[in-house]
Image (cartoon, rainbow, N blue to C red; front, side, top):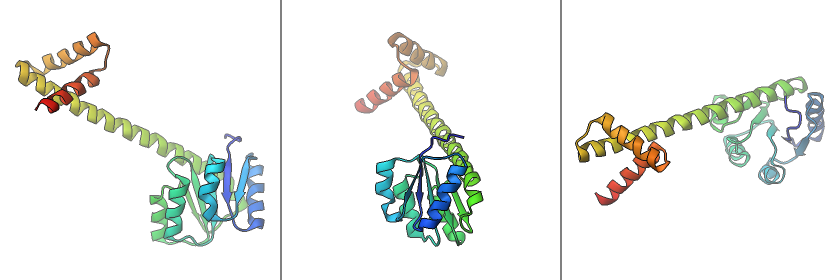
Length: 194
């Protein structure tokens, strides 16, 4: 557990805010800042740039969730929200908003640490999954470009697919470039000429 993490707490009630701070300090997190008004969340995030955001709100609505998602940049940091009441639609909206944790039935002091640890772990897992998805999309895109370049060479030079790939690879090696860069240049040039 990284105890140096900056945690921003959004809590309007000062007594509850103190309980949250105490629970976080008991959990080993001492770098905690509190904002009393959720409308100040965006400005506070810019000024503080926390590692984690913890929001305690009794009755969120869809607009609040969208606002939180937008200003908190839930894709770039874990955001945990504690609510008193919710329904299926709001839970789905919370998931859609990218919250790392959405805890119904209020905030209890002894649940804060495990919920935040779970939110951090879930956030890291989602970041890794997004990274792997982006890499897979890029690999697929590169493969399509290379296949198209091979097709262009096969038609222009009347060679086999293997020979077309070998020509791309040799050209890349001779020029100190990647095969995908050579293939992209060929495809771009063909599109410009064609």
